[in-house]
Length: 203
Image 1 (cartoon, one colour):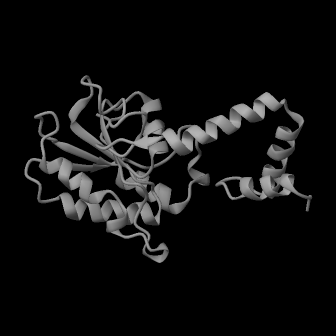
Image 2 (tube, rainbow, N blue to C red):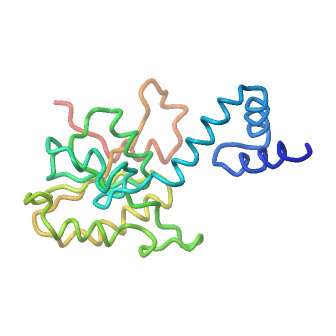
């Protein structure tokens, strides 16, 4: 344990996801050894995050204005909506450059043990978007891209139940299976089973 402000900083940093006490300590001492201007810039950036970051009124993604850059882009395919758990998932899919539609950020996944039910997620907003035509265009496909874990699967199942009665709407789920460059012998049973059930015709 260190004394005073440095320990307070380590404690606060250690609360962040993916950072334990050792990582928090490294960052704290790196800041301590840095220039005062570096700390000033970090402080200003944190204040801007606190005060200026908003969420898109349409999809729930992080935005600088009332609508995010994706929802504001007329070139995006308004007939397809990809449903993700968090804003970071939007960025992950955008990096593939494979999806040209729009997004809907739920703000998490169903987790009854942690008190997260449908009312804590942006599911009502998704249903409202599907009921109201976006830019005068009908949504024809909802791609459910929740995480492939227990909470993500529960959320995907719930969404399918809620969306199945929308006329002309196709609900799809991201395929899951073996990673590129992987060996079958090292794949766990669940991943291998998903790969088998999601197999596709080659010829």
